[in-house]
Amino acid sequence: MATVLQFELPPEPTLTPRPESAAARRVRLGSRGLAHLFTALFTAFALIMVAGLAAMLFYKGELLRMGPSGSYIGGGPADTVAFGSLPLDQRLVYMLVGLVRYVPVLMLFWHLRALFGGYAKGQVFTRDAGVTLGRVGVWLCAYALTPFLCHLFLDATGYELDEQWLHLASVQAFVLGLLVFVIGQVMQVGHEIHEEREGFV
Image (tube, rainbow, N blue to C red; front, side, top):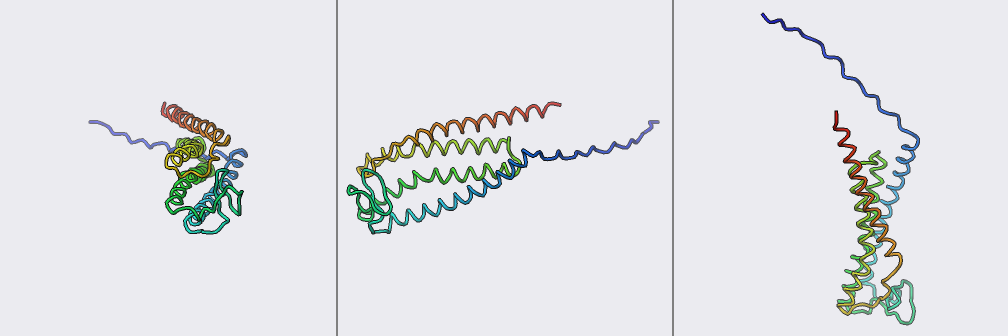
């Protein structure tokens, strides 16, 4: 007759959390402040965009002007015209151009807010952090390219007034965007390697 022996399982070891280092605490607290900052910038820029679009559509005064040398608020050179004096179709086209050019800035603030919000929660070298950083790079590149793309569109339609579209800042933003995108990809690869090593027993 078989004998059944019953053994008590040893208690599972309790893992004590590693105390937070001073550097990690500084990163977490600084990131929390930056997350609040980018949230405020996102909100403020969204309100400015709404106000700007409303002014482009409804304002008929002389304070909003546009010409070959650029756009001006509060007056401008003699070669500019009041934006409100332009035909409705031209104003609508410029509203569309304004959206295309400045939505990337809005999205930059949104993803930077998400990135530093994750850092504030201790999510630093994670896959999500790498993806979010990559998106920051993509929107930086989009911000750099939209002036040229909008110039091509306006030139083709004959609506272009502002000819000051090529700026060194756009080239710098594009190069920086590429770098940030690649760093985001590197972070994702590093996280995958870490997960593979953790999977080995």
